[in-house]
Amino acid sequence: MGDTTPHIVIVGTGFGGLGMAIQLKKAGIENVTLLEKAGSVGGTWRDNTYPGAACDVQSHLYSFSFEPKSDWTRKFGLQPEIRAYLEHCASKYGLRDHIRFNTEVTDAQFDKTSGTWTIETAGGESISAQVLITACGQLNQPAMPSIEGIDRFQGKVFHSARWDHDYDLTGKRVAVIGTGASAIQFVPQIISKVTSLKLFQRSGAWVLPKPDRPFTGLEQWLFGHFPLVDRSYRNLIYWRNESRALGFTRFGFLLNAFKWLAKREVRRRVRDPEKRKNLIPDYPIGCKRILISNDWYPAIDQDHLELMTDPIDRVESDAVVTKDGSRHPVDTLIFGTGFKATDFLTPITITGLDGLDLNDAWREGAEAYKGISVAGFPNLFMLYGPNTNLAHSSIVFMLESQIHYVMQCVNRLKDPGLHFMDVKAQRQQTYNEGVQRALTHSVWEAGCNSWYKTASGKNTVNWPGFTFSYRLMTRKLDLQDYELYPRPAR
Image 1 (cartoon, rainbow, N blue to C red):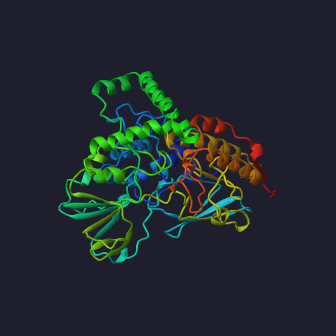
Image 2: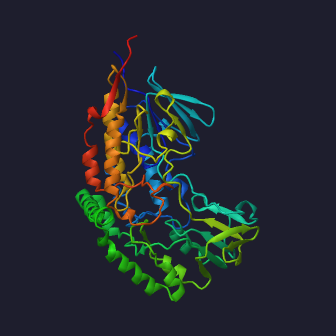
């Protein structure tokens, strides 16, 4: 009868895309093409090269379970080491021959007659595939602040996710806009170089000490020579992190111990009473992302760092002007304003059955069945899709659950009599109503605005439960959840 394996296109080569391709190859499926907009693999760990870039999940858990790395240099991996790990995975599993670099996807359309996706690239190419898997991540589109006059600024301007390493900050007067996860890492790295740093803060962040240190040579030797030690250490991290889910998803008061710890750190590390007061958030801990750092508060404590809490009114050619009329001359603007996390799959235009546009389907906010499948978009599977992000554990664990689920779908689509599969709209609706109900009990609904939410206030990003419950939910494909369309008779 011949090979009935469908051609599979994966968009993105971060943890999701590489992990998916590896599992397909392990299953003997070679008809796989990965499309990567950049010139190398790595996803967010390729793009974010700002000084101090590091992970806030422990290295042994922030890695594939099937590809342990025994020689991590630190408890929490730095960007270069995580990127090197992904490069290693791409090479070890023979993925490079499957990757088309510098190939940005702009459009994807499903044709129900042929049962295929036609993927268009920025270079004008068309690629056909029976299965389309998106692994674009949630942190790949930098969010630029909407401030009057930015385009008139005559100095240097860049976003932390597009760091200009050729630009020397030594002796510069710098304005940093934003105090999120990126800023708390790069500000301590540049504070000793600059003449002055104006740190514009819209709201404070809850920042905890980071339990980080280098691994000793003995520890690395034990991890490498005794796999049971490595696995036991990973499991210990996993269950310790998992216990924190209760504080985020059901019982916010459990996070108050961390609140006390953050306040103690501010008192110990920052001398200026005014800075201390402005650093303490006015929202419940956990409502926005909790950050971890050992050098953030010492950096804030520097005399040549000024913490600005007055809102920005406009930017002039050589200064930032705040609402109170104060003018702050600067040479450099650095945006630490994060990403458009709720704009899933942006800026790709995706068209499903009968001309249905994904943007229209998601007009009220992105949603997907189990964060993976969207009704009306057959044979399209998302990794790190809506409501699969975490605040307490490793997204790589969630990705492996999703990859296992998608593998079952791919194996089902190998049936020569099956044209395509489309998740039932009612199953998707019921599932997402349950997700949103669960989110009402979470700390993310405690009254603050965050990047977890759309402009209308819908949380389309976070998973409101344990990661092991998500793994159990994705362990077995239920074909009753899908409409299965038979292949038309020739």
